[in-house]
Length: 238
Ligand code: ADP
Ligand code: MG
Image 1 (tube, rainbow, N blue to C red):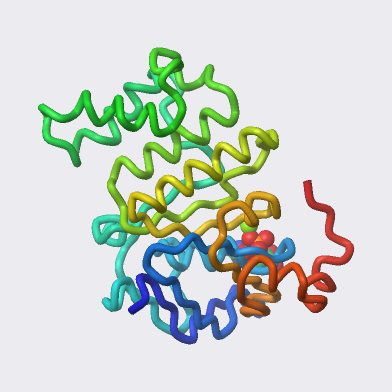
Image 2: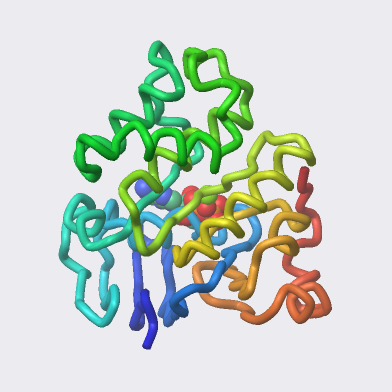
């Protein structure tokens, strides 16, 4: 049984075929990375999964249920949660207060403080709990944002370039956070450029190219695939 599945998913923008016959399967419990050159259709596919774009044709199933026509908030209610590239935190509030806001609808009032503390520790933000979110480092802001997303206690966490702009140390720490989430039973799908991160976390890698699934497999298989190397030629990656 897959947690998330797409069946012949297509998206056209005018004459552009941006998502092309994508049959994608996400296995419960895995960390799955989605890679591909710029313009490959990663963000569009991501937005289709979230319900921010309507597919031109095809279906999306979550835990076996057809969610193709559900609105984003309805998908979130079913157990999907997302962290975007642009932080959506409240900059003038402390890190702890941000988490409190995200947690309050999902947590019994008596357990709220304990949950805030648990999340702060999990996100390596204990020492910054009283700091205004706007003053956190770039990496810490991203972790707080992950915290806002997992406060909803999702079954599936979608991450759009979680390590963009991070130092190698921050990237590695983000990988550890993702692994810890997986150990807690959360399935993760991440769009990611940083191959060190992909190697650190991914059980499975899918390569998109011109909107289609071009290759799929373990990171070792993907890195060894000369066809995959060829589509990245001319691309510069940080
Ligand atoms: P990636 O995230 O892999 O870089 P995108 O999904 O952002 O790729 O874009 C894939 C293609 O679709 C690009 O050619 C892009 O210009 C086009 N595209 C993306 N969003 C839109 C849109 N809202 N309207 C028209 N074209 C779009
Ligand atoms: Mg993109």
